[in-house]
Amino acid sequence: MDAARASSRLWSIVLAGGEETRVGSLIRSWLGRPKPKQYCAFVGTRSLLQHTLDRAAKLSPWEHIVTVISREYAHDARCQLEGRGSFKILAQPASCKTAAAIYIPLTYIRTQDSQATVVIYPSDHFVYPESRFLNSVQRAIWTAEWLPDRVVLLGVSPEHLELDYGWITPGEKLDGSTNYQIMAVRSFLENPTAAQADAALAAGALWNTFVVVAKVDVLWELGWEHFLPMMFRLERLGQQIGTPQESAILDDIYRDLPAYGFSSDLLQHVPERIAVVEMTGVLWSDWGKPERIANTLRRIGRQPAFPLTCLSRPYVPIPLVGSDGGATANIQMNA
Image (cartoon, rainbow, N blue to C red):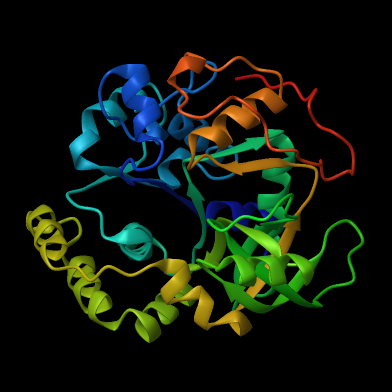
């Protein structure tokens, strides 16, 4: 497939419907009310959601972006989305874990292009520099075109023991490129124990960034294999998209939608269907804890937008090593 045609079939799903959990105390202390972290600007003027959407739009056209938001915080989200391009916004009435957050927008994309390639972006992660991150995403897109039967993940070399991240143990190298590595996956570990994470670290495993690239039909096939009760409901939704019944059907689906984890209930069971592209030269962090946010901002030399007194723990960064083997404390960022 030529580059122009591939670009026209590229879609993005931005996941922004999660509810606030461990960062909630920081946000309530800072803003005086609850607010999901993806709608917050912890540094600079753009929220995590705005950063993620702007990144996605650099690879796929705005009209090929679908974002999932929480209906409870729809006002916060929609205020932030004004002035950007025209894209699909799905306001979910309830949180049903990550499989639903991926497969419901996938249902909308599939009605327009069942042969599309889709990139899935979490909206609560920090990446720097953005250009290198997008280069890695582009490599994952090329990989999904080259290996169309596989789900492609971006992995990053771990910097410390981490129990909250998924771990990917790479297998054999799948190509002869010297610029970046495409590897098969020997095993995929979600929600590890300390002993499992320690063993994964010793075995050269990568952190899973949860940035996913795959062909729509591959994800749909895997959905039927692992999320059967949900898929029957989504087929019903797909038949009603664009009709007056669409909104009511979507609400009805959420009333008893099974809650599946995309990683724990699918990826962990099909390592042979996964390829991993190792992302290098990028500072990446899942901002799921206040101390991760503080440590990252300290590391790039930026002052957080929130008062440091809002942190319940001391503002002491975890010792980290950059992907080039040297300290990265002097990285600068344009927010």
